[in-house]
Length: 260
Image 1: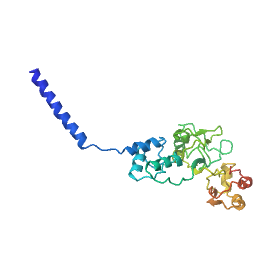
Image 2: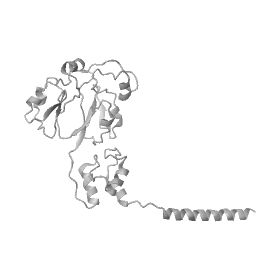
Image 3: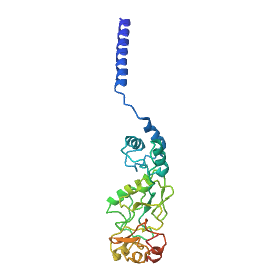
Image 4: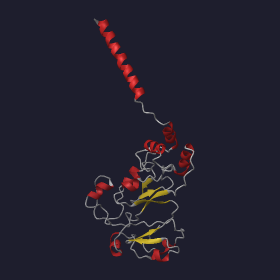
């Protein structure tokens, strides 16, 4: 009785194995080899700066013609040129490199606190406790969420309680910008040298009440800029890095030393 059972089970195994083999051939999904070739060209950061879930999906979209050849922000012009060469296309024009910049100068020595926060070291958690420990509702909370999410360790926390961004290491992925609950990190033109380190929309008197270096909307930088590269957005000055010639006049005239 054992032999017939073994033979029947073996026969069934052969039948189902054949069916699976047929199905695998019949319903096989062919993968374009160019997808793997594009993936090999990419930097492999899986940062999502391209707008897709990761490098694998971006490669698929490029091959399908739904994503731009220069969509890999960390790879920049070099990666874009290699991808273009793979497809026999012209290299896309290199876009200006962007890097993360902090838009807050209110450190532990210049910005006032509302209370002492002794909870989880997380900016979003601190914000839920009384609106955050900083008296300025626009200022950096300083608990390092941006440090945690940076995929290339380009951000560290300084002794003054503010993040320090290594712009040479920054890959422009924007994760720190998206993670910051106060939105005090922005991606700016890497060629820009001078930056307004404040986002407060309060009036001058209110700003002085919470921070010694915040923008008080005096407009001296706007009036003295020789190339009209600075304008006001509400109560804070903004520098257009594409117009700015980096002369440094704004730094000299700013009474609050908000422009660095």
